[in-house]
Image 1: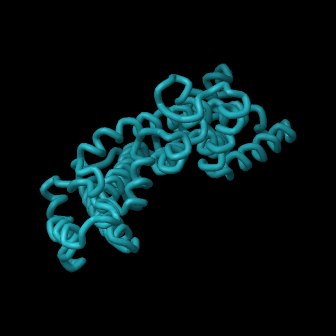
Image 2 (image 1 turned 45 degrees about the vertical axis):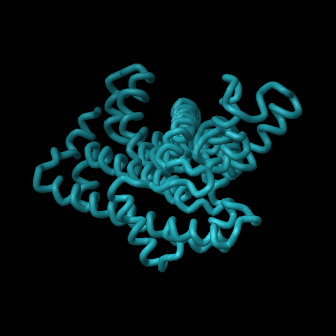
Length: 328
């Protein structure tokens, strides 16, 4: 890290870290409560009877009513909400209305496939975006290669503007249906990972590459970079050792937000590729009005996003404690 950067950072004291940690903990808990409440209300606002859907249209009314009574669905909504929260505190996510499987087991079976897909897509985003952003910043610094800059920015904007769902459909149509190079769906063959990962990673990689380029160009004009050049250091060391680490603060923030977006994006992409993860499960659960399954999966998705954002705040506070902690 450069000397210039070091002088602007002060070591966090215990008195400054405690309010920061308290505010972040309160924000996390309030956000989690809002998430749980929104998930509970939204699924209960869907018209229709989930028990009737689960038992079928030919089920006897007394059987349906007994089932509703056993599940507590005849209770007032406030009572159901209170029971839902108290069950969560005890670690009970409930039982699927459709399959009769504990929701915790259902999530445990499906979550690994979703996490693997999201993490692999995020890895591809970082591996592609950082080198591309650095190369484009080096090639276009000082207003050079206007054509290359225009082509890069235009292409990245177009790719980033395409929704994951449409990109997934286009990839399937071209590489699986037309060319037959890769599987259409599933998770069995190694090649089945390629299209879902690309569908998730291409858009965020384009955005992150632009961010890396812009941040690096702004850092290249700083005094410590000119000092490094004045010492006749190799260009490779100037860019990678001095400039790039100082350009990664904003990139880290955007990258972590993209990880949260990638997890959310798996819902649509998994349905296109019949991926056996939580994304395809939650869509089916919503269609079947499986209250406990939907609430449990939303809880997992939301908690994951909140934890990623919390981790980003902590990392940024460690990197730049003076600004982050005081502004928190």
